[in-house]
Length: 396
Figure (tube, rainbow, N blue to C red):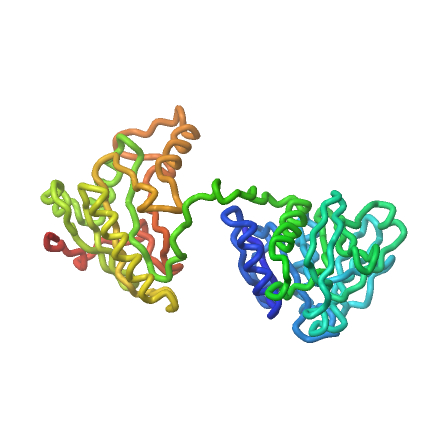
C-alpha cells in the first residue's frame, strides 16, 4: 500500500520522516494535484498526507476534480493526515472554492487552516505536546495555526494533543469523516530545524497508529537488523527461481526462450548460456553452479551502481538473469530485501492439496525476481522467440 504525500517544499522532510517510520510496510510517494484528479490512486492508498502551501497565508486548495477525488476517498474509508495544518469545524458547507471535508452524518465541514506566516512558524520557539495517552513529546515547533472546534467535537474527545506552551492550546485532532478518518497536527512541517527528531518520529508513530496504519515496531541498537545496501540506481541481476523439486519449471522456460540446447550443453559449468534480445531489452542468461559465482555477478552490478549513484536508472542497460543450480535459492547476500525460501514455503502452505502435473505449474511457482528493474522492462511471458536469440560463449 502507498502513503501519498501532496507536494510542497515542506513536505520533502516530512516524506523522509514518514519513510523512516513506515519502512518496509508502506511505500511513501509524492503526488500532485493533477495525479489526484486523473489517476486511480485511491485504491492503493493507505493514507493521504497534506501539508500547507509554500506561500502563506494562502489557503489549501485543489482543482475541483482533485477535490472531488479526495472527498470520495475519505468518505469511502480513506485516511488523511494534515501536518502543519489547523482546522475549523463548521456546521454548514463552505463556499465551493474553499477546500474542506464534508461529513454528512454529523453535518460538519472540516476546513483545513494554513499557517498565517509560514516563514515565522519555521523559526518559532520549541515547545512540548501532551498526548491524549499522557505521553509528553518535547522539542516540537508550532506551525502557527488555530483549531476552531464545535462544542459537539469537544465533547466527543477529538483532541489528541495539547501544547504545554501556550498552556492548553490544541496541538492535534482526529475525527471521523464518512467511513474514513482525518487527523490534523499543528506542528511545523519544516522538520529540518526541529531540535528533537525522535519526538517528531514518535508523534508520527502515534498519529499513524491512531489512523489504523500498521507501524513497524521500534528496535533498540542491539535488535537492529544488518543495514540494507543503498537503493540501487541501475538494474541488478535477476533470478529465475523454482520451488524445491520442480527444476522442470526453469528448464521449460529456457526451452521456450530458445535457450535449451545451450543450457543443456553447458549445465556443468558456470557460463553465459545465451541472450534474448527484443526492441526494448537484452537479457543475458547465466547458469551458475555455485552461489559464489552468483554473488560475484551481483557484487559487480552493485559496484557499478555505487560508482554512478547520482544518476537516474538506466533504461537500456543489459539485464543479467541468473540460473542457480537445481533447488538452490539465493542467500541473504544475493537478495537482501527478499527471502525466497520463506516465499516458497508459504506458497506451498497456501497451495496445499493443489498439486500441479509434470507439464504445468501453479501460479507463483515460476518466480522471476530482481531487486531493481525499470518500469519498462520486457515481460518474458510476452516475448516471442525470434532469430535474435543467440548462444553466448562460455565465460571464465
